[in-house]
Image (cartoon, rainbow, N blue to C red; front, side, top):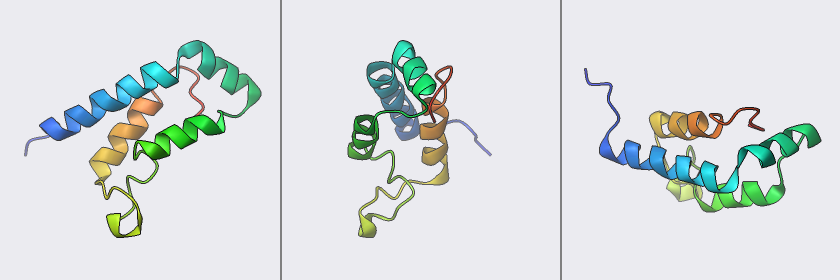
Length: 85
């Protein structure tokens, strides 16, 4: 059994990493952590990028991703120290 990520999964991982680097810089994450809440704009961007609807069937407005895609997104979002997620 092959446990390596597929090319599509690697692209998703890289995309989420880029998103985190751009929209979740460490200093901002620390501020959000101290405030106890990330900004609503961040959730809007996450939704626009399909991160929040990854487990939802496309019939209902989601992207219909599998459990591996969900795990990749969560893992990359929580990779920041003191992440608000």
